[in-house]
Amino acid sequence: MKANTLIATWWPAALALWLTAALVGCGDSKRDAIGRTEVVIETSEGDIVVRLYDDTPRHRDNFVRNARAGIYDGLLFNRIVPEMVIQTGDTALRVDHAGQGVKEDPAHWLEAEVVYPRHFHKQGALAAAREPDSINPGRRSSHLQWYIVTGKTYTAAQLRELQAAIYEARVASLFQHLQGLRAAELDSLRRVSRAAQQQLLNALQVEAENTVAAAPPPPFTEVQKQVYAKSGGAPHLDGDYTVFGEVVEGMPIAMRLGRTPVDARERPRKAVWVKRVTVR
Image 1 (cartoon, one colour):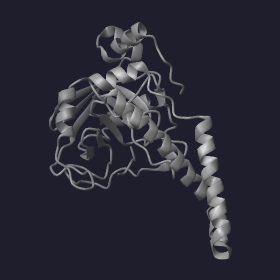
Image 2: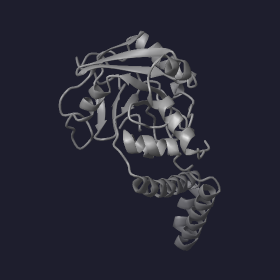
Image 3: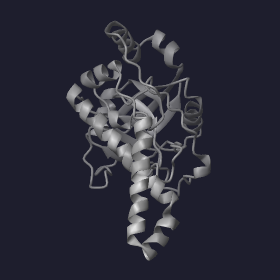
Image 4: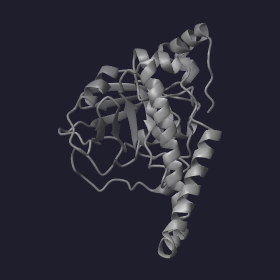
C-alpha cells in the first residue's frame, strides 16, 4: 500500500489444516506463538483489538511507541479501498483539523520485516504502508501509516490468474526501475538515435524478464489458498509489505469501516477516525 495514496512451501493437507488453525484461531496458545502485545484501536465505529507479532520487532516497537505518544489519536482513516484495506496514519488529516501533523520523513522509514509466507494478507492482517518501489526499492515502511486488510474471498482459479498478474507486474516494475537507472543514457540516445534508444529499451526489457524468471514470485501455499477461499484477504499484496500483526477482536468493526463510501481518490465521503490507540 502506498503511504500517501521468501520461499513458499507446499504443505501436506493435514499439516496445512493444522497451520491454518494456528494462524486463524485465537487463545493464549496463539498469543504465545505470535506475540503478547495487544493494542486497542478505538474508532468512531467501535473498537478493534490487534495483536502485534514478535518476529517483526521494529514494526511492533514503532507502533507501540507511536500509540503511547498519542500520535494516532484523532486521525482520520484517509484511504479506504473497498474489499481490500482501511488505512490511517497521515498525521495531517485529523478529525478536529488541528495542527500540521508529523512530517513523513524517509529518514525515519523502517527497514522491511517481510516474514512471508508465515505472515500474509489474510482478512484482519495489520501491515505498514509504504511508498512505491520506484522511489523505495528497499520496500521500507512508513513509520506512521498502517492498514488493516478487509479483503475478499478468492477461488483457486482466481489465485492462479492473480499469480500470473503478479509475475507480469514484477517484470514491469523492474523494467521501470532499470529505465530510471539509465535515464540519462536513454535521454541522450533519444536525441541522437531513436533506434539506438529502442535497442537499449529492448535490452532492459529482456534483463527485467530474465531477472524475474530467475527468482519468480513464490506460489501461494496451501494455507494461503484455504484462508483466502474461506475468509478472504488481499493476496496481491503478499510479500511486498510488512505484515506485523492481526485483528483478534472487532473484525466486524473493521469490515464496517471498509464499507464506508469513498470518492475517486479512495477518500471516505464521511469522516471515520481513530479515537484513541491504547497498548494493553
